[in-house]
Every structure is written in C-alpha cells, then in structure tokens.
Length: 286
Image (cartoon, rainbow, N blue to C red):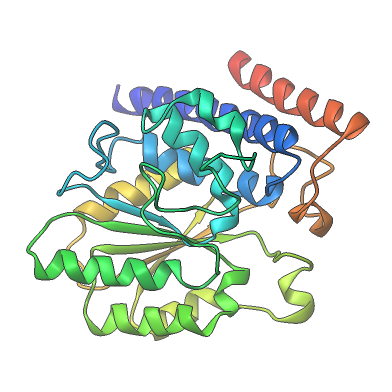
C-alpha cells in the first residue's frame, strides 16, 4: 500500500516536471533568451524539492522566519525556478511570460528581489558559499531549518566552491545539502575534454562530506534523498551527485553543447514541442 502511494506521488510529480519543461520552452521562446538545456537538466530535481512535501516554504509569507532555504547556485536555470515559484503562488503565473522583457523583474539569472528567490546567483561559484553561511546562521540561531543549494558540475571548477565545501565541513553543517547537477557539460564543451571534475564523489568525501549518488531524472530517487536528509543523524554536510542529461526531454538537445545558449526556432521548435507533448502523453498511458 505504501509503495503504491509512493508510486502515485512519483507519477504526479513527473507530470509536474514535464509541465515545467514545456513552460520553460514557452518562456524562453517568447523572450528569445534564457537557458533551455540547463533548465531541462534539473527539472526533476527542482520538482522533487519544491513539490515533494519535505521542503518547508510559505508562498504567501516568503520571508517566514522558520522556512527552509533553497539557493540556485547554477543561476542560469533561473527560468525553471521562476516557473515553479509562480506555480506555487509566490507571484502571479501571468508574470512568467514577461521573462527578460523590458520592465520585467524576471531576469536571466535569479535575483533576490523576486518573492521566493533567496540570492542573486549570476556569477557561478557563489551560491554554495551563501548557502554555507545560511546553514551556519541556522545552527547558531538554534533553528531546525535546512539549506539546499543546486550547483552545476562545470561550476565545480570554481575555487570558491571548494572554499565553501571546506568551510561547511569544518563547521559540521549537517543542515546543508549541495546537489550537483552532474550532466558532464559546461557552457561550451564536455568536462572530460578540457577539465574533468572526476572523481567528484571522492573529492567531496575527502573534504569531509557525506556523499550520495542518484539518478537526477528519477523523482523517487531524489525524493528519497531529500527525505533522508532531514532525518539523518550524521554531523557532516551532504553532497548529492545527481547524474543527469543536459537538454533532457528533447532528443536533438540532449548532450549537445550548442544548446546551452540556443533557443529553438522554426522546425526545431515544432519538434521540441511535439517531443515534450508526446513524452507527457506516453507517461499518462503507463
């Protein structure tokens, strides 16, 4: 009975992740700007965090003192986070289609002037540093809140990331979780072809972190990790290496470096819309 209930929850959340990809595509096509493939890469991760029932926020009270805090360190996926926040009620859904347009507050990278966004993360390598500071503040204030930060694997080239990792371990920030969107690509190339971050698991463990590896497109797998994160007794911060595919959901975008920046047009757009719609329909039949 429990497994059946969990399976139903996972199906519902997968539909939400499918919706998120379609919404991201609509927003970026309208704006002719944004990062489609990096947002598709983390769709299930963001969905599991915000809709899974373990992360505590109040859309009508975004500055609630006892909230959990999420920081999108890979700020180029801002368009996906905006869609989720609007869907939850932090701000009107109608505002999404103003993304990067003149007069809009929804910029290409996250800005903390937007309800639900905790930090400006336009410069990579800074979000995890902010997250470590937040987690330390929670500890010193005696709060039970947690902080989750989502990083890109290419972002792990930044020295500031490893400074934050050392800091978190030193202060035993077991209320801090860093999820690495490990799709093997940065803005222009495959990591293994110019600067590999492997072995990523061994590196985090050497810095004193507990590490879990998960399929980043498995709603159930991510939910399980987020749930255990709140329940565990370890004194170590948690790193989750989420193995993903950049551009997931649209075949011609998947694992193609050029789609970090590109927005589909013409025939490409028709194909992308069809694939995202067909994927959703297939899952409904299962």
